[in-house]
Length: 77
Image (cartoon, rainbow, N blue to C red; front, side, top):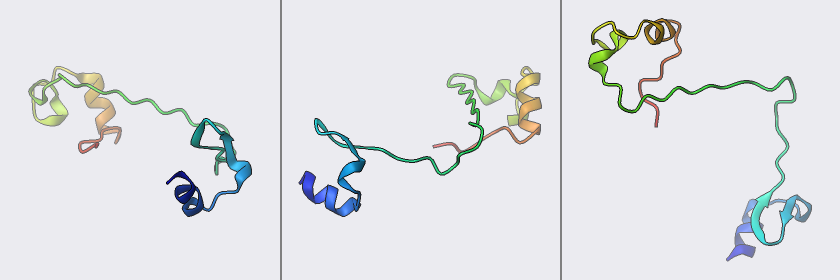
């Protein structure tokens, strides 16, 4: 099965890093510039009723400010 997967991937044998982890391969990044910094703020238990941007009470001014600058994902899966 692993050989079938390796063949289907079309990768050179030199791309495979460790024989004990048969799917681990070296991948060259396509972006070669300065690394980007990504910050994700995940609020699991913060209900919409407490966030002004989401139609609730304005109890989160900094969060609302970020949302107004398009830093809000409403449907992140």
